[in-house]
Length: 409
Image (cartoon, rainbow, N blue to C red; front, top):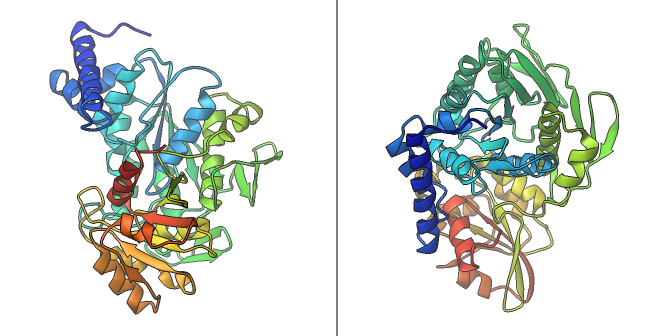
Protein backbone atom coordinates (compact mmCIF):
# COMPACT_ATOMS: atom_id res chain seq x y z
CA UNK A 1 0.00 0.00 0.00
CA UNK A 2 1.08 3.59 -0.68
CA UNK A 3 2.80 5.27 2.27
CA UNK A 4 0.59 7.81 4.02
CA UNK A 5 1.75 11.47 4.07
CA UNK A 6 3.51 12.40 7.31
CA UNK A 7 0.56 14.41 8.65
CA UNK A 8 -1.82 11.53 8.02
CA UNK A 9 0.60 9.09 9.69
CA UNK A 10 0.74 11.31 12.77
CA UNK A 11 -3.06 11.75 12.86
CA UNK A 12 -3.60 8.01 12.51
CA UNK A 13 -1.06 7.19 15.24
CA UNK A 14 -2.52 9.70 17.69
CA UNK A 15 -6.01 8.38 16.95
CA UNK A 16 -4.90 4.84 17.75
CA UNK A 17 -3.34 6.08 20.99
CA UNK A 18 -6.59 7.83 21.97
CA UNK A 19 -8.55 4.64 21.23
CA UNK A 20 -6.17 2.55 23.33
CA UNK A 21 -6.40 5.01 26.22
CA UNK A 22 -10.20 4.96 26.02
CA UNK A 23 -10.22 1.18 26.31
CA UNK A 24 -7.66 1.10 29.12
CA UNK A 25 -9.59 3.62 31.22
CA UNK A 26 -12.92 1.89 30.63
CA UNK A 27 -14.42 4.91 28.87
CA UNK A 28 -15.43 2.92 25.79
CA UNK A 29 -14.16 0.60 23.08
CA UNK A 30 -12.25 3.43 21.34
CA UNK A 31 -14.00 2.93 18.02
CA UNK A 32 -15.22 6.55 17.83
CA UNK A 33 -12.80 8.69 19.83
CA UNK A 34 -9.79 7.44 17.87
CA UNK A 35 -11.38 8.49 14.59
CA UNK A 36 -12.45 11.87 15.95
CA UNK A 37 -8.90 12.66 17.08
CA UNK A 38 -7.51 11.59 13.71
CA UNK A 39 -10.00 13.68 11.74
CA UNK A 40 -9.33 16.75 13.90
CA UNK A 41 -5.65 16.59 12.94
CA UNK A 42 -6.22 15.58 9.30
CA UNK A 43 -9.76 16.18 7.93
CA UNK A 44 -8.94 14.16 4.79
CA UNK A 45 -7.75 11.14 6.77
CA UNK A 46 -10.56 8.79 5.71
CA UNK A 47 -9.80 9.30 2.02
CA UNK A 48 -6.11 8.70 2.59
CA UNK A 49 -6.62 5.60 4.70
CA UNK A 50 -9.03 4.13 2.12
CA UNK A 51 -6.65 4.62 -0.81
CA UNK A 52 -5.32 1.41 -2.40
CA UNK A 53 -7.64 -0.84 -0.40
CA UNK A 54 -10.38 -3.09 -1.74
CA UNK A 55 -13.39 -1.79 0.18
CA UNK A 56 -16.98 -2.91 0.69
CA UNK A 57 -19.55 -0.62 2.31
CA UNK A 58 -22.59 -2.22 3.97
CA UNK A 59 -25.74 -0.17 4.55
CA UNK A 60 -29.32 -0.92 5.61
CA UNK A 61 -31.78 -0.12 8.38
CA UNK A 62 -31.39 -3.59 9.93
CA UNK A 63 -28.66 -6.22 9.71
CA UNK A 64 -25.68 -3.97 8.92
CA UNK A 65 -23.50 -5.14 11.80
CA UNK A 66 -24.22 -8.82 11.26
CA UNK A 67 -23.70 -8.71 7.50
CA UNK A 68 -20.48 -6.73 7.94
CA UNK A 69 -19.25 -9.40 10.32
CA UNK A 70 -20.18 -12.20 7.90
CA UNK A 71 -18.45 -10.53 4.94
CA UNK A 72 -15.38 -9.87 7.06
CA UNK A 73 -15.28 -13.49 8.17
CA UNK A 74 -15.43 -14.62 4.54
CA UNK A 75 -12.72 -12.25 3.31
CA UNK A 76 -10.34 -13.35 6.07
CA UNK A 77 -9.94 -16.38 3.83
CA UNK A 78 -7.85 -14.24 1.45
CA UNK A 79 -6.18 -11.64 3.68
CA UNK A 80 -6.33 -9.21 6.59
CA UNK A 81 -9.53 -7.17 6.79
CA UNK A 82 -10.08 -3.77 8.42
CA UNK A 83 -13.61 -3.44 9.82
CA UNK A 84 -15.63 -1.46 12.36
CA UNK A 85 -16.40 -4.53 14.45
CA UNK A 86 -18.32 -2.64 17.16
CA UNK A 87 -20.69 -0.96 14.71
CA UNK A 88 -19.34 2.62 14.85
CA UNK A 89 -20.79 3.34 11.41
CA UNK A 90 -20.04 7.03 10.77
CA UNK A 91 -16.79 8.52 9.40
CA UNK A 92 -15.04 8.68 12.79
CA UNK A 93 -15.67 4.96 13.24
CA UNK A 94 -14.43 4.23 9.73
CA UNK A 95 -11.20 6.17 10.33
CA UNK A 96 -10.65 4.29 13.58
CA UNK A 97 -11.22 0.91 11.90
CA UNK A 98 -8.87 1.61 9.00
CA UNK A 99 -6.22 3.08 11.33
CA UNK A 100 -6.27 0.03 13.58
CA UNK A 101 -5.53 -2.18 10.56
CA UNK A 102 -3.41 0.20 8.52
CA UNK A 103 -1.81 -2.53 6.39
CA UNK A 104 -4.95 -4.58 5.68
CA UNK A 105 -5.54 -4.87 1.91
CA UNK A 106 -9.30 -5.33 2.44
CA UNK A 107 -11.87 -3.25 4.29
CA UNK A 108 -15.51 -3.95 5.16
CA UNK A 109 -17.26 -0.95 6.68
CA UNK A 110 -20.76 -0.78 8.11
CA UNK A 111 -22.19 2.61 7.09
CA UNK A 112 -25.15 4.52 8.50
CA UNK A 113 -27.78 4.94 5.79
CA UNK A 114 -27.60 8.73 5.91
CA UNK A 115 -23.81 8.77 5.63
CA UNK A 116 -23.52 6.35 2.71
CA UNK A 117 -23.28 9.04 -0.02
CA UNK A 118 -20.55 10.92 1.85
CA UNK A 119 -18.54 7.79 2.71
CA UNK A 120 -18.81 6.39 -0.81
CA UNK A 121 -17.64 9.68 -2.29
CA UNK A 122 -14.73 9.88 0.17
CA UNK A 123 -13.50 6.30 -0.01
CA UNK A 124 -14.32 5.40 -3.63
CA UNK A 125 -15.31 1.91 -2.42
CA UNK A 126 -15.52 -0.68 -5.17
CA UNK A 127 -18.42 -2.65 -3.66
CA UNK A 128 -21.57 -1.45 -1.88
CA UNK A 129 -24.05 -3.84 -0.20
CA UNK A 130 -27.62 -2.53 0.22
CA UNK A 131 -30.11 -4.70 2.11
CA UNK A 132 -33.26 -2.94 3.37
CA UNK A 133 -34.86 0.39 4.23
CA UNK A 134 -37.58 0.86 6.86
CA UNK A 135 -38.73 3.45 9.41
CA UNK A 136 -36.18 4.04 12.14
CA UNK A 137 -35.35 6.70 14.79
CA UNK A 138 -38.31 8.82 13.79
CA UNK A 139 -37.18 11.96 15.62
CA UNK A 140 -33.93 12.36 13.68
CA UNK A 141 -33.73 10.01 10.70
CA UNK A 142 -34.63 11.25 7.24
CA UNK A 143 -37.79 9.89 5.62
CA UNK A 144 -36.71 6.64 4.03
CA UNK A 145 -37.81 7.61 0.50
CA UNK A 146 -35.42 10.56 0.79
CA UNK A 147 -32.67 8.17 1.86
CA UNK A 148 -33.31 5.98 -1.19
CA UNK A 149 -33.17 9.07 -3.37
CA UNK A 150 -29.81 10.06 -1.85
CA UNK A 151 -28.52 6.56 -2.59
CA UNK A 152 -29.63 6.91 -6.23
CA UNK A 153 -27.78 10.18 -6.63
CA UNK A 154 -24.67 8.89 -4.87
CA UNK A 155 -24.42 5.78 -7.06
CA UNK A 156 -25.16 7.48 -10.37
CA UNK A 157 -22.06 7.78 -12.52
CA UNK A 158 -19.86 5.77 -10.13
CA UNK A 159 -18.11 2.55 -11.21
CA UNK A 160 -19.15 0.90 -7.93
CA UNK A 161 -20.45 -2.69 -8.01
CA UNK A 162 -23.67 -2.77 -5.98
CA UNK A 163 -25.04 -5.89 -4.29
CA UNK A 164 -28.72 -5.14 -3.60
CA UNK A 165 -31.77 -6.90 -2.17
CA UNK A 166 -34.30 -6.79 -5.00
CA UNK A 167 -37.14 -7.95 -2.72
CA UNK A 168 -37.18 -4.46 -1.16
CA UNK A 169 -38.64 -1.93 -3.66
CA UNK A 170 -36.97 1.05 -1.98
CA UNK A 171 -33.55 -0.63 -2.07
CA UNK A 172 -34.12 -1.58 -5.70
CA UNK A 173 -34.99 2.01 -6.59
CA UNK A 174 -32.02 3.34 -4.65
CA UNK A 175 -29.60 0.92 -6.33
CA UNK A 176 -30.92 1.09 -9.89
CA UNK A 177 -28.74 4.01 -11.02
CA UNK A 178 -25.52 2.08 -10.34
CA UNK A 179 -23.30 1.05 -13.23
CA UNK A 180 -23.30 -2.60 -12.13
CA UNK A 181 -25.83 -4.29 -9.86
CA UNK A 182 -25.98 -7.87 -8.65
CA UNK A 183 -29.54 -8.52 -7.53
CA UNK A 184 -30.14 -10.76 -4.52
CA UNK A 185 -33.50 -12.18 -3.44
CA UNK A 186 -32.92 -12.04 0.30
CA UNK A 187 -36.53 -11.67 1.43
CA UNK A 188 -38.50 -8.82 2.99
CA UNK A 189 -40.69 -9.75 5.95
CA UNK A 190 -41.51 -6.10 6.86
CA UNK A 191 -43.48 -4.53 3.99
CA UNK A 192 -45.27 -1.64 5.70
CA UNK A 193 -42.91 0.98 4.25
CA UNK A 194 -43.07 -0.13 0.63
CA UNK A 195 -46.62 -0.47 -0.62
CA UNK A 196 -46.22 2.48 -3.02
CA UNK A 197 -43.97 2.84 -6.04
CA UNK A 198 -40.98 5.10 -5.30
CA UNK A 199 -40.75 5.96 -9.01
CA UNK A 200 -44.29 7.28 -9.61
CA UNK A 201 -46.20 6.92 -6.32
CA UNK A 202 -48.62 4.35 -7.68
CA UNK A 203 -49.65 1.17 -5.83
CA UNK A 204 -47.35 -1.86 -5.84
CA UNK A 205 -48.89 -5.22 -6.62
CA UNK A 206 -47.25 -8.01 -4.61
CA UNK A 207 -47.33 -11.76 -5.00
CA UNK A 208 -44.95 -13.70 -2.75
CA UNK A 209 -41.50 -12.12 -3.30
CA UNK A 210 -42.45 -10.57 -6.64
CA UNK A 211 -43.70 -7.00 -6.94
CA UNK A 212 -44.49 -4.51 -9.70
CA UNK A 213 -46.00 -1.05 -10.01
CA UNK A 214 -49.55 -0.97 -11.35
CA UNK A 215 -49.06 2.41 -13.03
CA UNK A 216 -45.49 2.47 -14.43
CA UNK A 217 -42.76 0.07 -15.56
CA UNK A 218 -40.96 -0.16 -12.21
CA UNK A 219 -40.78 -3.82 -11.15
CA UNK A 220 -38.68 -6.35 -9.28
CA UNK A 221 -35.52 -7.27 -11.20
CA UNK A 222 -34.60 -10.87 -11.85
CA UNK A 223 -32.28 -11.97 -9.02
CA UNK A 224 -28.92 -13.66 -9.61
CA UNK A 225 -28.79 -14.98 -6.03
CA UNK A 226 -31.85 -16.47 -4.34
CA UNK A 227 -32.46 -17.42 -0.72
CA UNK A 228 -34.46 -20.64 -0.80
CA UNK A 229 -35.49 -21.47 2.78
CA UNK A 230 -32.26 -22.75 4.38
CA UNK A 231 -30.20 -22.72 1.18
CA UNK A 232 -28.90 -20.29 -1.41
CA UNK A 233 -29.05 -20.69 -5.18
CA UNK A 234 -26.04 -19.00 -6.79
CA UNK A 235 -25.92 -17.30 -10.25
CA UNK A 236 -24.96 -20.62 -11.89
CA UNK A 237 -28.01 -22.39 -10.46
CA UNK A 238 -26.07 -24.39 -7.88
CA UNK A 239 -27.82 -24.86 -4.54
CA UNK A 240 -25.80 -24.54 -1.32
CA UNK A 241 -27.07 -25.47 2.15
CA UNK A 242 -26.30 -22.48 4.37
CA UNK A 243 -26.16 -24.30 7.73
CA UNK A 244 -25.09 -21.14 9.60
CA UNK A 245 -25.16 -20.91 13.40
CA UNK A 246 -26.84 -17.49 13.56
CA UNK A 247 -30.60 -18.04 14.00
CA UNK A 248 -33.59 -16.89 11.97
CA UNK A 249 -34.62 -15.96 8.45
CA UNK A 250 -33.04 -12.51 8.67
CA UNK A 251 -29.61 -14.01 9.27
CA UNK A 252 -29.98 -16.42 6.37
CA UNK A 253 -30.76 -13.35 4.25
CA UNK A 254 -27.67 -11.62 5.66
CA UNK A 255 -25.60 -14.67 4.76
CA UNK A 256 -26.78 -14.66 1.14
CA UNK A 257 -25.87 -10.97 0.83
CA UNK A 258 -22.45 -11.77 2.32
CA UNK A 259 -21.84 -14.58 -0.17
CA UNK A 260 -22.73 -12.30 -3.09
CA UNK A 261 -20.30 -9.66 -1.80
CA UNK A 262 -17.60 -12.31 -1.33
CA UNK A 263 -17.98 -13.37 -4.96
CA UNK A 264 -17.62 -9.73 -6.01
CA UNK A 265 -14.16 -10.01 -4.42
CA UNK A 266 -13.54 -13.19 -6.47
CA UNK A 267 -14.01 -15.43 -3.44
CA UNK A 268 -16.17 -18.42 -4.46
CA UNK A 269 -18.98 -19.86 -2.34
CA UNK A 270 -17.08 -23.04 -1.52
CA UNK A 271 -14.39 -20.99 0.23
CA UNK A 272 -16.61 -18.28 1.75
CA UNK A 273 -19.44 -20.39 3.19
CA UNK A 274 -17.34 -22.36 5.73
CA UNK A 275 -16.16 -19.03 7.14
CA UNK A 276 -19.75 -17.83 7.58
CA UNK A 277 -20.60 -21.00 9.47
CA UNK A 278 -17.99 -20.15 12.12
CA UNK A 279 -19.82 -16.99 13.26
CA UNK A 280 -21.88 -17.63 16.42
CA UNK A 281 -22.60 -14.10 17.73
CA UNK A 282 -22.14 -10.52 16.58
CA UNK A 283 -21.33 -7.75 19.09
CA UNK A 284 -23.32 -9.60 21.75
CA UNK A 285 -26.31 -10.43 19.55
CA UNK A 286 -27.55 -14.03 20.07
CA UNK A 287 -25.09 -14.52 22.94
CA UNK A 288 -26.39 -16.46 25.93
CA UNK A 289 -25.29 -15.17 29.33
CA UNK A 290 -25.84 -16.89 32.67
CA UNK A 291 -26.62 -15.72 36.19
CA UNK A 292 -27.67 -17.91 39.11
CA UNK A 293 -28.95 -20.74 36.94
CA UNK A 294 -30.76 -18.53 34.44
CA UNK A 295 -29.56 -18.53 30.82
CA UNK A 296 -30.56 -15.32 29.02
CA UNK A 297 -30.23 -15.12 25.25
CA UNK A 298 -29.72 -11.52 24.08
CA UNK A 299 -31.58 -10.27 20.99
CA UNK A 300 -31.37 -6.74 19.58
CA UNK A 301 -34.37 -4.93 18.05
CA UNK A 302 -34.23 -1.21 17.25
CA UNK A 303 -37.33 -0.55 15.14
CA UNK A 304 -40.55 -2.27 13.99
CA UNK A 305 -38.83 -4.36 11.31
CA UNK A 306 -36.17 -5.45 13.80
CA UNK A 307 -38.77 -6.48 16.39
CA UNK A 308 -40.52 -8.59 13.75
CA UNK A 309 -37.26 -10.46 13.10
CA UNK A 310 -36.55 -10.82 16.84
CA UNK A 311 -39.96 -12.41 17.37
CA UNK A 312 -39.06 -14.89 14.61
CA UNK A 313 -35.95 -15.94 16.56
CA UNK A 314 -37.47 -15.91 20.07
CA UNK A 315 -38.63 -19.26 21.48
CA UNK A 316 -42.43 -19.12 22.03
CA UNK A 317 -42.12 -21.64 24.89
CA UNK A 318 -39.88 -19.37 27.00
CA UNK A 319 -40.54 -16.31 29.16
CA UNK A 320 -39.36 -13.08 27.59
CA UNK A 321 -37.88 -9.85 28.95
CA UNK A 322 -38.38 -6.67 26.90
CA UNK A 323 -36.25 -3.58 27.53
CA UNK A 324 -36.67 -0.19 25.82
CA UNK A 325 -34.73 3.06 26.25
CA UNK A 326 -35.06 6.32 24.32
CA UNK A 327 -31.60 7.85 24.44
CA UNK A 328 -29.92 9.64 21.54
CA UNK A 329 -28.69 6.49 19.73
CA UNK A 330 -32.15 4.92 20.05
CA UNK A 331 -34.13 7.96 18.94
CA UNK A 332 -36.10 9.78 21.63
CA UNK A 333 -39.48 9.26 19.95
CA UNK A 334 -41.02 5.94 21.06
CA UNK A 335 -44.14 6.23 18.90
CA UNK A 336 -42.71 3.46 16.70
CA UNK A 337 -43.78 1.00 19.42
CA UNK A 338 -47.32 1.30 18.04
CA UNK A 339 -46.14 -0.08 14.69
CA UNK A 340 -45.06 -3.37 16.31
CA UNK A 341 -47.62 -6.16 16.57
CA UNK A 342 -47.02 -7.49 20.09
CA UNK A 343 -49.99 -9.86 20.03
CA UNK A 344 -47.57 -12.66 19.14
CA UNK A 345 -46.43 -12.55 22.80
CA UNK A 346 -49.83 -13.58 24.18
CA UNK A 347 -49.65 -16.74 26.23
CA UNK A 348 -46.08 -16.43 27.45
CA UNK A 349 -44.71 -14.66 30.57
CA UNK A 350 -43.64 -11.12 29.58
CA UNK A 351 -41.48 -8.82 31.73
CA UNK A 352 -40.96 -5.15 30.86
CA UNK A 353 -38.00 -2.99 31.87
CA UNK A 354 -35.84 -0.16 30.56
CA UNK A 355 -36.05 3.62 30.87
CA UNK A 356 -39.24 3.74 28.78
CA UNK A 357 -40.87 0.68 30.30
CA UNK A 358 -44.15 2.53 30.88
CA UNK A 359 -44.40 3.43 27.17
CA UNK A 360 -43.94 -0.23 26.33
CA UNK A 361 -46.33 -1.30 29.09
CA UNK A 362 -49.09 0.87 27.65
CA UNK A 363 -48.51 -0.61 24.19
CA UNK A 364 -48.72 -4.16 25.57
CA UNK A 365 -51.84 -3.31 27.54
CA UNK A 366 -53.60 -2.11 24.38
CA UNK A 367 -52.49 -5.32 22.63
CA UNK A 368 -54.01 -7.38 25.50
CA UNK A 369 -50.64 -8.89 26.38
CA UNK A 370 -50.28 -9.56 30.15
CA UNK A 371 -46.96 -8.36 31.58
CA UNK A 372 -45.03 -7.46 34.73
CA UNK A 373 -43.16 -4.16 35.01
CA UNK A 374 -39.68 -4.31 36.58
CA UNK A 375 -37.49 -1.42 37.70
CA UNK A 376 -34.28 -2.98 36.40
CA UNK A 377 -33.11 -5.78 34.14
CA UNK A 378 -31.56 -7.53 37.16
CA UNK A 379 -34.96 -7.55 38.86
CA UNK A 380 -36.62 -8.95 35.74
CA UNK A 381 -34.02 -11.70 35.44
CA UNK A 382 -34.31 -12.57 39.14
CA UNK A 383 -38.05 -13.14 38.69
CA UNK A 384 -37.39 -15.99 36.22
CA UNK A 385 -37.24 -19.64 37.27
CA UNK A 386 -33.91 -21.39 36.63
CA UNK A 387 -33.53 -22.16 32.93
CA UNK A 388 -33.65 -20.26 29.67
CA UNK A 389 -35.18 -16.87 28.95
CA UNK A 390 -35.14 -14.65 25.86
CA UNK A 391 -34.29 -10.95 26.10
CA UNK A 392 -35.19 -8.38 23.42
CA UNK A 393 -33.78 -4.89 23.91
CA UNK A 394 -33.27 -1.80 21.80
CA UNK A 395 -29.82 -0.32 21.26
CA UNK A 396 -28.77 1.42 24.50
CA UNK A 397 -30.80 -0.99 26.63
CA UNK A 398 -28.96 -3.85 24.92
CA UNK A 399 -25.58 -2.23 25.58
CA UNK A 400 -26.45 -1.70 29.26
CA UNK A 401 -27.35 -5.37 29.61
CA UNK A 402 -24.12 -6.39 27.87
CA UNK A 403 -22.16 -4.21 30.30
CA UNK A 404 -23.70 -6.06 33.24
CA UNK A 405 -22.14 -9.25 31.87
CA UNK A 406 -18.79 -7.77 30.82
CA UNK A 407 -19.87 -6.86 27.26
CA UNK A 408 -19.95 -10.48 26.09
CA UNK A 409 -19.43 -10.79 22.32
